[in-house]
Image 1 (cartoon, one colour):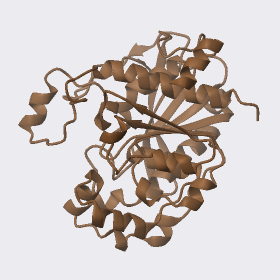
Image 2: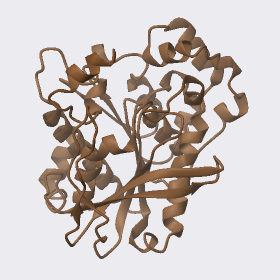
Image 3: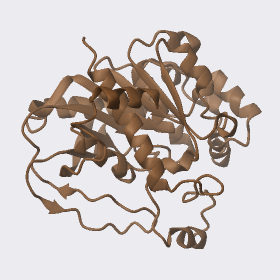
Length: 345
């Protein structure tokens, strides 16, 4: 938290704290996705200067939602844009806890549901198609930049990307990271109990059968100037050459103590290869602590449907609540983007 402490001391967070109560608008938009020859469902959160209609409670039996104002008009001015990418089997709506905090601090936050790796439609074969997810983020940026309703409000010199788990790989890819197919296959040969490898095995996926050209291509989007990756996956396949070639600020956050972070996402060695990268860990938490807070009866519901992932469990002994973990992580993420966007071009 050294960076956050410095920013607080300098007063750079005083006007845009994650604890601000400024109203936030939200909309759900369908947008073209040329890379998929289809459309994407995207959610966007943004500062708003006037009242709107509160988003009605969802029917989600697991996660709590964070209040926002549906279809409220966007506030006057232009704002930094943060693209956000959910994890495998997740959804963009379940990251509202973070998106709303960032929007209240003066960012526009937008992200798609990635078809084939979203809650309800996720499949092991689709999960190997990493290039589709990074193309989704680029398509979101292209669509918003061309939309007369949004383009005047986007500060195109200050565009960042934020991702969790598989979404962490997605944002690293748009920063310029490339993956090696054989390295990823060898990792799963050796680490069969890691969650991603178990997932592929459940669908009888042969990683060596994935399209090598597409899997290993560059998905760099030069319009993106800053990246925050939380527990990024696929790290064991990142190529050293591509890591050393990254030329934008990168912040990597691992959740948990170093000795408890699974090799599937542990990134201290990865960060060490990226010029100027910032690496931090979050103690008293686990990988799934990044998900939205669970409803009180969610554990019983999950048990009733046979869910085996510990979706609502945080660190053993519960040293902190998930809400407390979220406050810390939102502050770290906001501080990272503020510091990067304050730099002179």
